[in-house]
Amino acid sequence: MNVRLKMFAVLKERSGAAEAELQLPQGTKVSAALEQIGRRFPGIADVLPKAAVAVNLNYAGRDTVLHDGDELALIPPVSGGRA
Amino acid sequence: MSGEDDLIRLQAEPIDVGAVVGWVSDVDGGAIAAFVGATRRQGGEEGKTLAALDYEAYEQMALGQMRQWAARARQQWPIRKLAIVHRTGRVEVGRPSVAIVVSTPHRAQAFEACHYLIDALKAELAVWKKEVWSDGNSSWVD
Image (tube, rainbow over all chains, first blue to last red; front, top):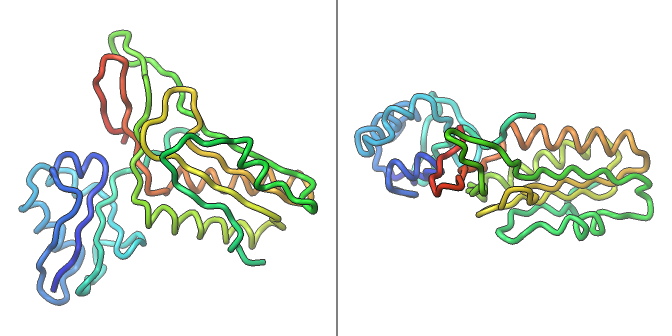
């Protein structure tokens, strides 16, 4: 199945890509997808454990099962700042 | 009350705060509260100063988040009109990066709704900022 990967901010810069297509076996979880992403984009491998993930525009946990056509986004810490 | 009339926007152009306040004005809203977040001047290492912030958004997600928080605010307070406008791209120091404006019948409700919304944005909005320093260096804020 195909999953569209989107990367932002520091992750986009360090990976050198804003978007990529991932080919994954049916039933792949976010955690396994992140391992594949780390191999394909070694420049961000060290950041991946800390990055939040969104699937189809909603924050998702590492155990979330991906489906064909999903959009998986790597979310660096948000800009927020101090209150 | 539906939130279809909310003004929820990401924009690369400067925020005209007066125009947003004007948009939120309502004959039944006796109170209008506005929160404006601006890029703050700050010093870095070796005397360099912050020149600007570059904002990058995951637009679809950020718009969805803002609509969701607007709907939650409407469940909690009797909001007449509501606007959330956030910048993308380069914002010079001292310029607005976000404006949240709410009109309600009475002032406490407007303050509370405004406070709720900016706290939600600060914690979770899918927008990132990069510091651009006076010496030309830049770095993502994390």
